[in-house]
Length: 262
Image (cartoon, rainbow, N blue to C red; front, side):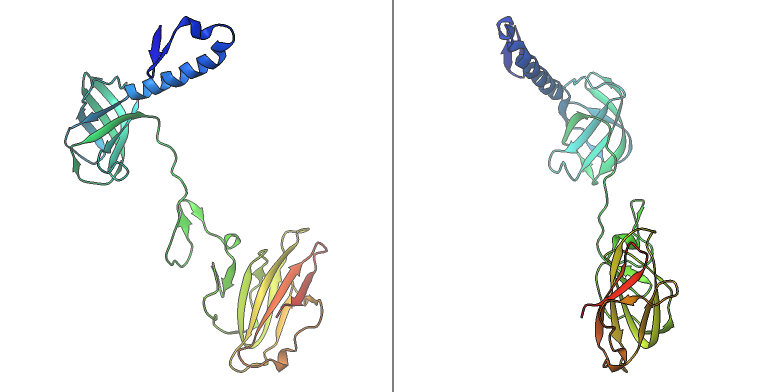
């Protein structure tokens, strides 16, 4: 007869087909006991930091050299901790090479727990404002991942009217579902480059008149004005400050089509 995790087992528990469920139960309880066997506390006063630390354990827990342990402040375990590998243990004296820490200060009440290797760093969120290229934990934020282009900048949402432009502008790359805001202070020709051949994509253009009004917008592909579905707006009649919402779409035939939303 043996006891695992407080549960007694005898030969009679394994008669017939009972062994199928009992073996799984025993394995679970064995792991529970093993986990407890790699958990203890320490009253050693340690300053949080990397490098080798000598810890006096409350119990002679069998931590093995090369294994991983985590020391957590018993009061603020999520804030103050140290993690590393065991270099040696003799009785209740444990030597740990700390490679990862959290928090700061000198702590004299620790939980000491055997762990596995530290996992990979997860994704990073961001907040606040930024300009230029944004690198997030090795991943670059690109125009494909945002919705709005204001002048030469791609942004998450509309902010304020961009600076007015006139003449032929640099081509806008077709980004499916994106939005571009253009203010005209003269007649504007705006090329939109096609997506990869055979792909269908569409985007929204906000075309705004400046303080004068009557500015003409010509939306083209590489060289040819897009085909209007329905009537093209009467640009010359638009008052100062008027905004027009236009859908620009490339269809599977590779042609650029334009439609007036508002």
